[in-house]
Image (cartoon, rainbow, N blue to C red; front, side, top):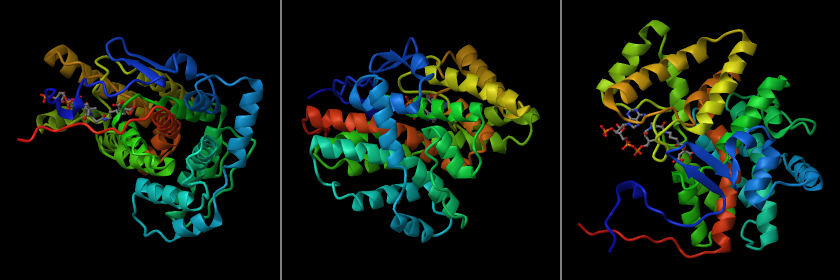
Length: 365
Ligand code: SDX
């Protein structure tokens, strides 16, 4: 039997055509296209690319966008369910239950034909933003806001969350966030989803596996951890002590480090630029400056002093973007999932298309 690798570090579990990561050079490609190029497209086009394996032409883009818009609405019965949640439930827990609900309302839930899976993928991508906005508003007794067809995927989410049509830069920031969050090879949530898909469980169940795994603070939950950290540092004068004392206590600084990237996460670079532009548009660089100071302290501490490649990851500057978009920390992981759902669907379909049950061994000790 093979030697055991804790956390499956460095283990190649399968072949994929969906994404490519070079952790040394800091390269990320979806379907062979660099993330820097994809970040300037729309989430509709990038989610289509991930799920269908190609950039859609003009006709395909219009059809796909139309189908997504036609499926943004959520069932009135689901809104009733959301209204009955006890206050204080974590947003991601509500989202997990809501996805179970839309599965119950989908007559094709347990149909495994390519057509049924295509329909389910449209419903999942289209409804995630509506559900996240509705569960947040119902958590403090507010009625959901109906989706607006004239707005892009990202802009419509911000509108349903706040009731205000976002500025052009805010809308661009949201689209970029969804694109940068969409896919990342065999990260923990995607791998858990592939295991479920490998037993031929249905797509909704596989996505719920992904959601439950993403929730963990060492994975998708880190974005909320970064936002909480920015709030905890009550004034910039204590930043250095705050970070060093956490490290003293052997606590992880959220938003830094990565199992694969041993250099700057290419997504973090793009988020940092968006955060800087939002700060300037807001006329208030406080959050951006605070984050940049934390980055400098971590660089000095890890790269210069300890010689350890700990850089910002996808969750660090995305948290600053969320601050400027007035997104509550409580929603951070759910919004990460809103983007990641298209990558999850792509992996679910890829697993179905060339399947073998995923079943590793264990050394009995
Ligand atoms: C995501 O895999 C993906 O692709 C995930 C993701 C995606 O798109 O799906 O990129 C999204 O999950 C990004 C990561 C978000 N998580 C965090 O920001 C939480 C903080 N980061 C760490 O928990 C950690 O860096 C991990 C979990 C991300 C990676 O951990 P590894 O590869 O298991 O590394 P490790 O924990 O073994 O750390 C190696 C060393 C340790 O020190 P020693 O025990 O060797 O002395 O580096 C230290 C760690 O203590 N270290 C950190 C640190 N990250 C690593 N120390 C302080 N702060 C950190 N953030």
